[in-house]
Amino acid sequence: TLGHASGGEGDEAAAAAGAALGAHQLLMTTYMTLSFATDALAVAAQQMIASETTTVGKRKVAVRVLQWGVGVGSACGLALSGGGGYLVRALAQADDVRAAAEPLMRLVL
Image 1 (tube, rainbow, N blue to C red):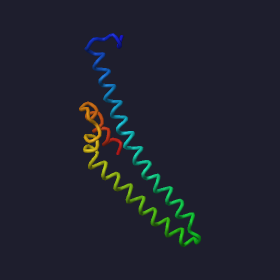
Image 2: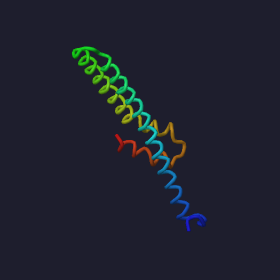
Image 3: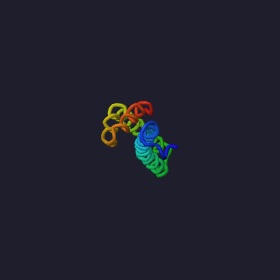
Image 4: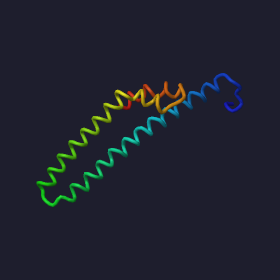
């Protein structure tokens, strides 16, 4: 069984599973952080639109918030596509996790 293996395939499988799990955790943390940051923009936009009393004011706020959303989304996408490898190297200490996460970072974008 895997628990009684002394070297060989069992250890390699466990190491590969650990690297995959580490890569998944790294990418999920990155995704969730960006998700919460952009969600904060959406919550603020809802409040700003709700606080406007006129239709013209609501439209002005909606246009501005849409511009902010496009800008923030584009900036996050560009930062990850250009700096995703740096992010992986900064957050992952193990070489096998880095090797597993770097190609996935490109796929996620």
